[in-house]
Image (tube, rainbow, N blue to C red; front, top):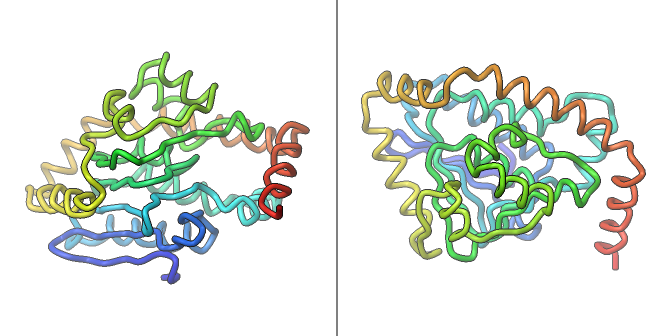
Length: 249
């Protein structure tokens, strides 16, 4: 496991912490690999009954490290980001997310695949794909309207408006808003409750709630094709050039 991802196991719960606080936990290829490996282990281990996903340093994740992501995306190979999203979208083990600070791009879209989500008042969710000349990913084009309703999904995806923890709870994305000092404990307590349930019944109930995953896989495939095309567009190139110029300045 990379030092940018911490994996701990307690009381039937696997805690996965994105630990690149200096970069607001922006995700790199090795971080995706580490998290994918952790989730794979969770599903294959009878001792792991629930997963908690959180960030360090007052941030969930700023999304993809753009330089790292672009290098991978333009290589023509399946990105590690996609492998992680495919894993979290098809996971059998329940996932609890603890969101503080920024949750940008995949930091928001992965939430649609979590079972319980707790956030702080200062959590800041944003899906800036259109602003970058791109399209939504991780099945969010399907799951956001289902979860939030078409009006809010359009607002948050097309306008790329940021929204806080309270708005996320009102929209149905978050279960509860708690103080930052209580966030990790709240998520772990919920995960321990899940882990204490009869495992077979819990996983079967979760599968029934989620229904057939074929439609999510189909949405992800459509998004992946549209995303690859959008990456080559003048709009995306201009947005990335502006981003890198700003980061250097």
